[in-house]
Length: 97
Image (tube, rainbow, N blue to C red):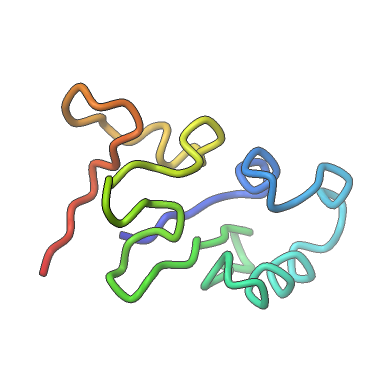
């Protein structure tokens, strides 16, 4: 499942510094794509899509435990997603294969 994030999320996650906030979004997107942190950037809405593995899982989701590896600094998309079960940090998205 693709995870869409904004610049504030990227700053919270620690992949963009606060002082970069005023830099053109296109430049930030180019750097993050090269680093394989994002896979797409929507110029019109300035929304970044986090990169995914071949399994289509978010790069920050642990493959074995299914726990978010950046849970404390996770993007708003993940923070606002309905939680499933009593497992803190568990990603509600499941594999479909």
